Image (cartoon, rainbow, N blue to C red; front, side, top):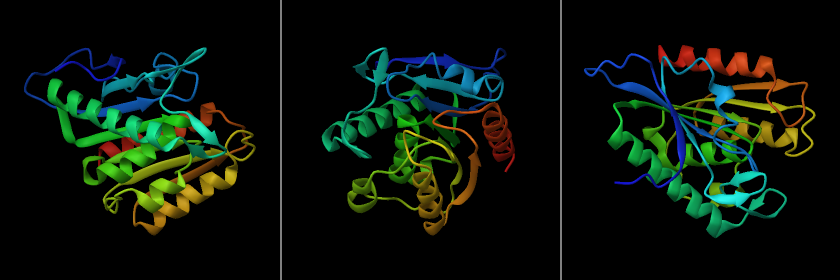
Length: 214
């Protein structure tokens, strides 16, 4: 089976053929690419197989996973296609690499965070944890998707209090929504705009490594 998406992989230097490994699927924001996200998972490659996925649509100077028709409103058909395509990629990766399917994590920034939270809702118990950095959940996902139980899931959700692209209130709404569904949510805010600060990086990295031990 050929990969349904272009991706960059990082993995432990010494692979034990008798073991399986946790996996981290990483998704970038609009106009970025899989290379730009690697600095956001730097240092985690000894614990994880890391898959940094490239959006399949061109969006200069990089790529995107979906297009938008309005503020906070992805084009539904394009968005649905992206969700299915990434799900296919997760299936591909778990079939090709020695992954521990009980320890699959998603990490995304902006558009990648939107997809990470959506995939958590659609894949349910297949996903152990999510790091969602500055995103939102489209209304049609909440109202029309087949949302699976997430009471087993842990999330690290963060948002900049001065985010000029996706309002801070949307981050608050993400936290409240997953709390209401029974997920274990860590919600962090930062005196930042639409970006990931060094403190944010340290916080979610620690959260992720702590989650592995639970």
